[in-house]
Image (cartoon, rainbow, N blue to C red; front, side):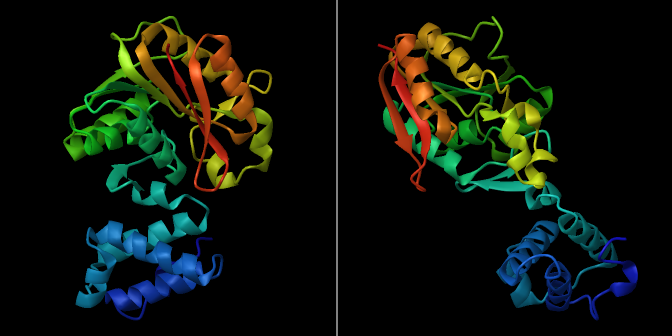
Length: 291
């Protein structure tokens, strides 16, 4: 039976009473801070206004809004990711639409964008392969309007979501379907190729949180146990073929395979191959130069 039933309405439809009601229910499963944060973020998304403003105004919720809020609380309580419940995720200062067809953008992937910016000329032509929600490509374009940014994904659902984000953010971005593992051709040469490809071996699935394995797309997460470098091999070939001289390949990696990815890039003839740590001190990215 859902936790938040219709007979258990808050004592008033004033925002502060509704928020307290939502928080008290979530506290039966989550710690106090998490319950408070999730309640505030749900109300922000529901009412399209920053929570501090809602509190100041002590906004009154309508009956339909209360019903929708109750439904969202039940989804959170049942283990659904907050970003999928609200259909919103933040990446840098961008608010993106997300759904279960794409990964929820992670903060560490922001570091991939920053690294790519530091290695690319201001007017670079860049492509993001396996774009998902479009977070990497859209952030690059938003932060560097002089760059020409393209983005591709094998999933039609992901491309639809990226297209929605492109339109919502009014950013000039070329999107198209592309399978990194195929013999398809890319449109021209690039100063940089970026990717956050699937890199988690299937056997690690059993140790991962259920809200990730049950909700986020397996296509974007997992690789065969027997070939964990599958996408890095493909990306290294694409880099040799489509990067301009001195162009860079920048990828996010599984921390356990940093040396293996580095070796793969060196073996195909890329140079200046470097492993980069994230802010947590983990091996998180590898960069290489075509030349």
